[in-house]
Each structure stands twice: as C-alpha cells, then as structure tokens.
Image 1 (tube, rainbow, N blue to C red):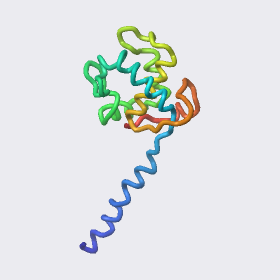
Image 2: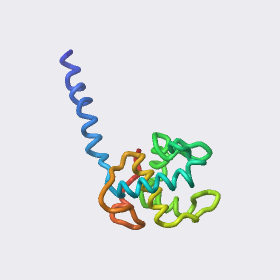
Image 3: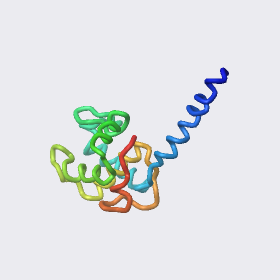
Length: 135
C-alpha cells in the first residue's frame, strides 16, 4: 500500500467500530411484548404500513426512509408511542388499548434493531424520552 494512503486506510477501518459504539440501542421492551405487538400490528397496522413495515398507503416504519423521517422529527421511543396511541389506527384513532400501543411500539423497535430487555415498554418509562429512533 502506498505510504500516504495508509493513514486513510486506518481511519476508514476504524469507522464502523466508532459508529457502532455511538449507536448502541437501549433495551426498552421484552421479547414477549414485541411478539404480541407483531400480532396487533398484523391486525391493525399492516393494511396501511405494509406487512413488512415497508410502507404502502402510510409511511414505512423501518429502514432508511423511516430513519430519515424519525431524524427529521427527532422521534424518540416515547414520541413514537404517543403518536401510535393518539393517532393510530388512522381509521379509528386511539381505539387500541394502552398495552396494545406499547406492544406495537415494541415491535417497531424490534424491527429496527433495538434489543429486547427484561422490562416491558411502558408510557413514561425510564429511557423512553432519551431513546432516539434510528433504524
């Protein structure tokens, strides 16, 4: 390797490690809660947001397009839960039970690479307002 390119190669080789260290995602839900959320999502959300959260009649809920929207809106886990609780499903806003809203939020977090933890996701729980949504 040319000597002047070696420092660049070292910098680029270190980038994924640094980026990964900065983007650790908190565990805000349980695996069981996300599994319940998948069932609620399938029944109440998939018709508009797509079976794979890819977006059809409504915006995508995972992937780069979702990430751009989440970043533009400074979306956190708490604001995501609030949006779901207050405005979804669009045909009957606020009709889901609070535990269903939390389960759907958990499922969306799971599908965006957030790890499961030991405590269920709940409105106002520790870390919810600090957890920026990133796919």
